[in-house]
Amino acid sequence: MKILTRIRIFSIVFFLSVLGFSSPKIETFFSPYKAPREAMIEAISKAKHTIDIAIYSFSASGLLTALKEVKESRPKLKIRMIFDDADNPDDSKGTPKTESSEKFEKMGMDVRYVHKIMHHKFMIIDGYPKGVDPDSDFSKTVLVTGSGNFSDGAHFRYNENFVILKNEPDLITQFQKEFQRMWNYSFDFPDESPQLIEEEYEDRLGFDDPDLDSIFTSDNFRKDLDFSNNGERVATREIEEAVENAKKSILVATGHFRLPLLANALIRAKEKARKAKRNLSIKVVVDGQDYVSKQGSEEDFQKYERCVQRAQDKDPSRLEACDMMGGLKMSRVLSDHGIDVRYKYYSYKWLYEKSEQMHHKYMIVDGARVLSGSFNWSRNAEWNTLENIVIFQGPSMKSVVGDFESDFYGLWELDRKRYQRHLKDISKKNRVPLHFKPMALTSSEIDRLFKALKKEIPDFLKSGKPEDSYWLKKENRGK
Image (tube, rainbow, N blue to C red; front, side, top):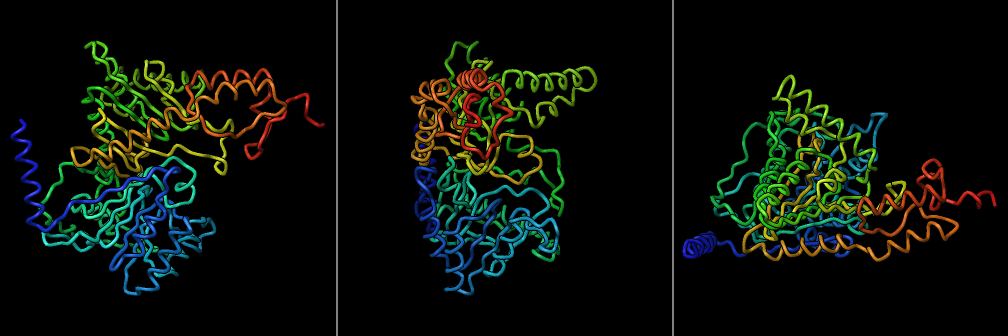
């Protein structure tokens, strides 16, 4: 086995050297502790030929300035953007994104949109839009991808991950193919004229990096302007298989966990390990928005059970549809089955402007493999949205996996020592903050907070608006 591994590694190194490829450079960034903005600005400033951006939300002023400046200094530079919801600006229902699209067009970008929710968050600098072959030089080509939108919130307030890869032919080509596929079936902004190019992206690279791979939910859709579903579910299948093959540990950080299919996969893995008398550690961190009361969780689970019962009685082929039900918060179900779950908790009444979201979408398996990208663990992400997952594994990705592990355990223990003081303050102080510094809490710990609030402020759920900073205790109101 060791001999075969050495031969495989030597073959890869030899192949790369023959093609003139040097080692890829990969850098990880985890907001809000280490923001990617300056590295992204630097990469943009060095662009010579093309910049391709596929992004759900773009409002980061620093990045906009960098794009404007590089376009002004190199007028022949082509900047293309696939931007979600780039609506017709004459529409009375125009959105802020419409205004952004107009701004991008005036800066010299070519903005388009697709007839699907476009949830990607990636940028390719000096790639190969027209096709790639073994002679293509990737030494100056850059890919930026991860969980975060291009916004100041994603860079400085939320928990996000960004990965910047340079000189990585295989993965960058996969993302370039994804961009071209969307571009070929896109609509122009602002006149809404369709772009319909049926020719395939020419990929003659001839190299497959065993340590990097990608999954795109576009494979769930037909190649047409509507991106109609074809019945596949590539992302959840990949996650399921990774969970099933886990031997020692599974660490999940996902903003939303709302899919029975993946909850069942984790529960089965835990039960299988228990029966085999094998320790499988499973830890899950979700955003505070996914907290659900015991009663709310039971109601959600009953919906799922009714669906399963109907399918078993009438049409077993519908069982997968039950597993893919949307809108069900699964975090407490996981806890009830012995899986450790914590919430990044920072608000009793969630408000976007005050939020410090845990916006990751990653899983680490056995301390050796990371699946990360734009894909939320939800039905919508699989079947209604264009998403990606990048897989980091193998010897060359060891440091990347280590970076993700460090980020996870930082979240897992986030300011937990402050919990008892926060709980006591509910009874001791005359006002209770609606929004506060984040803590990593279990569902039972949050339950205790709500129990204390109900005792001190019986109508706390009805009183106060989310944009308020505090609840006042009943005896202090009107003073």
